[in-house]
Length: 471
Image 1 (cartoon, rainbow, N blue to C red):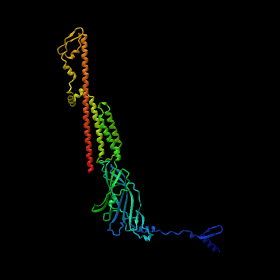
Image 2 (cartoon, one colour):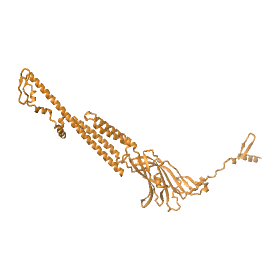
Image 3 (cartoon, rainbow, N blue to C red):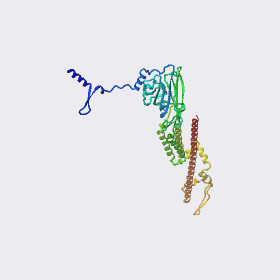
Image 4 (cartoon, rainbow, N blue to C red):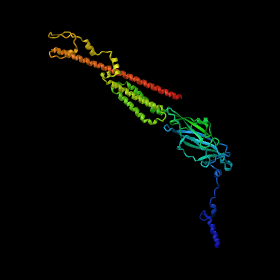
């Protein structure tokens, strides 16, 4: 009896009671409630089969003398940065490499028709293809998986931010074109072990610009490519070189740099038409020079610079500033001449010659007056008095004061003194007008020299530009 009860209790522990309603219950064995252990999926079985005896450190070929051909494809998406000082270019590319792995082959019919799976890139052999002149890691996203086809074709697709060294030609900034190369090669394997080839035709890769972000500073022209071998230490290495040809859009720099400089130079040239004796020319030219200096300081970071070569636009700005300083110095020189006296100018050899040349045409009015007056005739005045003067008296002798002079003689002396004073004032005024006219001629001469220098500078600039364009 106890044994039967013990057996019944054991059976109850291995079963569960399920009540469907208030008066009806069903006892279900506990083994039926536990789900069966799932069988391994076809994908899991395939992955275990492929990787169970796989060695990722061995090149995946049955015959070791057969090279592994790695096909490379490249799509330029954008040019992120071009640093002229450090000679670095940052580009965003979509990189694809395809090769055949002879150890990753299966029959799709044995695995539920699976023709392609994704595997971890750390679990299989991956070619050591790198970019030459790769100077920085960048911010590339990590893609840990690759696609494997049932025929053994492995596809490794990933985006890369490439920071590479590039020889930048900034002489024609901002109208420059750059040719930066991205060279792919195996770091250790020779061409007999790992060979490279293009996945698409070279013409298609060169003209494929539809995925390029074409709204930035740089415009993608083309991406020509070619295959070559590099010999190092008696071994040949296969490499594929992509030439990324880009061109800068100059509109921003023309509006912000060139046009203000040209306007200031034109205003400086027209400022020579201001009269030099007005006192406003030097102030105006100083304001132009100050404004140009402010523009140059604010836009200093916009111009790339290298230790080897200076852009032509940098030379343009430097010469423009030198011309502005020369123009200001010419105006200061003319204003200084205007404030020289006639005696100080005659002490200067070159201006003494110019002054004698321009003043020899008119003899001094005082000198003519002194040489033309020889005598004074006898004059009859009221009172019947008659004055006898010397045959050839000097007008200055009439101004001498004597104690015995009569009132009429004193009046005559005052008239002669007044006449001499007016003649002297008129002579000083005419001399001053001659000197101002001479200074204006010097100003015109300096203006002509300034225009000649500007013309020579522009022609030299255009010749240099033409030589660069034809090169």
